[in-house]
Image (cartoon, rainbow, N blue to C red; front, top):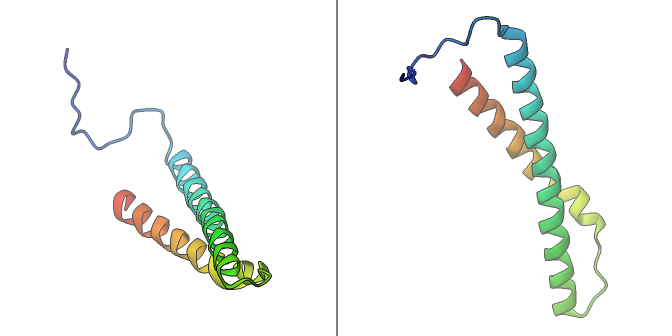
Length: 87
């Protein structure tokens, strides 16, 4: 018994509202992961640059200049992906 894998309609009983909720959750999750990944990489980068220069690191720069743009890219990318594949 082979299942038809190219059938695009959702199974009976699965409402459209659940799909929208899952999509919004994935957008939120991608934004959150992007923010945390941006923070981790920028903290490591600022720490390494400060160690090389022999100065005290200013980690507040990471909160202002590095992590928010990465989270914004994750947010926009996840919305584009959601619209492209669900729309």
